[in-house]
Length: 133
Picture 1: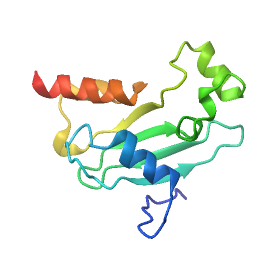
Picture 2: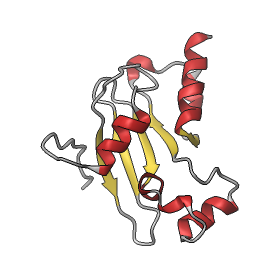
Picture 3: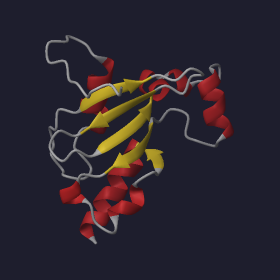
Picture 4: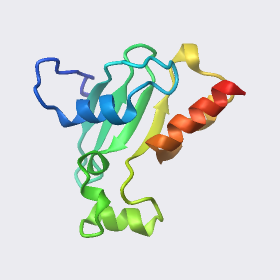
């Protein structure tokens, strides 16, 4: 059974909520500037643990590797950092994968982003470009 999305309003410090609110911020699809992202963790046996974020306004979903949120992958001293370096990725940037775009905001242009992995800043830039065209 899949874990449900949650948001802990009573938490003093929640690293996933803080990441979503600070680093992702505005939803790249519905442009809600305070979406209060929901999240859920997905654990895998051999690493590659991921955190999924869902905009409660438009129900778009994003996935970020847990090590990118915690910063563990920003150093070549960790296995996730070595993997990131081998793939030629920017070391000190969190990468996000678009899992789903909310139905009301889905169009032929932004559907190209589904399944794509990019930095958070690249996602915001590409979403802005697609809205302005």
